[in-house]
Amino acid sequence: MLMRYDVIVVGGGHAGIEASLASARMGKKTLLITILAEQIGATSCNPAIGGLAKGHLVKEIDALGGEMGVCTDKVGIQFRVLNSSKGPAVRGSRAQIDMDRYRIYMRNLCINTPNLDIKQEMADEVIVEDGEVKAVKTHLGNIYECKKAIITTGTFLRGLIHVGSFKQEAGRVGEFASNALSDNLKSLGLDTGRLKTGTCARIDANSIDFSVMEEQGGDENPEPFSFKTDKDNFNPTQLPCFITYTNQNTHNIIESNFFQAPLFTGQIEGVGPRYCPSIEDKVNRFREKDRHHLFIEPQTLEATEYYINGLTTSLPPKVQEEMIHSIKGLENAKIVRYGYAIEYDYVNPTELTHTLETKRIKGLYCAGQINGTTGYEEAAAQGLMASINAVLAIDEKEPLVFRRDEAYIGVLIDDLVTKGTKEPYRMFTSRAEYRLLLREDNADLRLSHYGLKIGLLDDERVSKVEKKREDIKIVLKHLEETFITPSKENEKLLTAIDEANVSDKVILKRVVGRKSFTISKFDKLLPKFAMLQNETKEQILIESKYDAYIKKQQNQIDRMKNLITKKIPKDFDFSKVSGLSAEIIEKLTKFNPPNLQSASQISGVTPAAIDILHIYIKLEQKNKKN
Image (cartoon, rainbow, N blue to C red; front, side, top):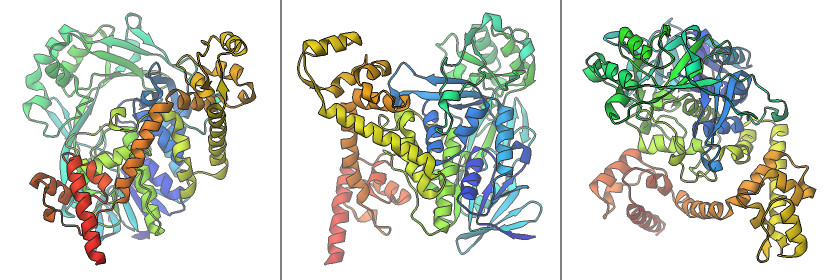
């Protein structure tokens, strides 16, 4: 049976959802192929969305017209801003979610989205002719023609589950592994590798003694993820999480069973995530620590099962039970689901361009864990961008590629395609050079106009963002043009709002930019702007407080833009550039960066090498003109 689509998305995880929704909403006939339709949107590991830097990605997805933030606001059961006492650049929104309701919401949304069909089948083969995608064939023999295909298979490519010595081919517990597609991608010439991740045991709530644990509640005034959510009426039911710790006895149990740990016996070949290690890995690597934090988190609003965040393991079932029972509050815990590790194939992301299209095969895109990343948020961001660019390519329009100074999404994709990864990649604020400009709170200001341009946001939503932008601009202009002097009248005014007097004539922005200055003080000092929304005032305070740092980063960006405009010819022969080391020539030839900015991000390519390259490109261009 032959059917025709514009875009086919393979895989119904977080990348697949954003990819298929974006394609359909941009007017393309889209097909989502998934092994189990009821598992669309399943949160395979922890029941949470966001976190440090990951929250930035969710806000950016939302600002472009994606769905993750909207769904999180509807099904969240605890909302917290991490690092709230620190600067706005490193704060991160995080929400515990009802994992069942999240899955149901996303599945129903996909089913009811116009232009989007869903097929419960297993994709076995990407059919390629003359180096270009033509169709996808499933295990049932169905062939679906397409103009573009996006592969978002998560942990399913040759997925192999480990629990002690037990091994099972599966992409997730109870679901088939995708072996044929993995072999097919390799046969197409894609460079693949092997990675590993894992999850922890889930515990029956009735068997947990919460009274001996530290309770951790949500924020008193929770902040929603989506800019669409009405903040004034956002009042979700919030459930507490709990904190307990491993102890020396726990560590002894784990260490005495290293000989049964697949991670150490050689049973597991794939490289695991450095920043989210299993408990056996933590005990082995950090022997000086006498305990590790564990967060006991509800999985649903009914809170019948709890997730033990920090206790990922693939130890045998009996060892898992002994280990868990050694922990305070879990002495009588009943395990509903055992923890496990899973190995899977991934495609080396250096095989991709910045649009997430493969370099070898036109029209074939990869997004999510298949690109070597870990995390729902990283996957969703890639799925959205792959789909946007696939649709733009169909329409013969310019691709949407974010610079590193524009979005965390830009940092994520640039890191992957220029540096590659040998371990599961995770987003951190430290990866973003311009993180003071790439804050969660201004994601709508940074990206909403792109969402409108590509057709994922409507005029009404973007007009609200533009109104906020204009209000900020007007107030900042007023603050920069209005001076305050050390007069008695001004001293009285500043004293009334509990602010120190000025000792010299300064612009009002200096007062508003003080660390002690708040929104309530803003209303009293600037009553004519008191009617503005609090989120607008918050932007004004941030812009004022970090004025010098923001300008410094902006100057750095302006200099970097000069590199971006210097394109490297596609047929440029790096080996002819004298002064470059053999290692740098090899890396530049392998990655073939499109411009000097991308070249500068490749690990090991020095500033001196960029200068030399710049000179040679100019000379070559000059010679061609002559």
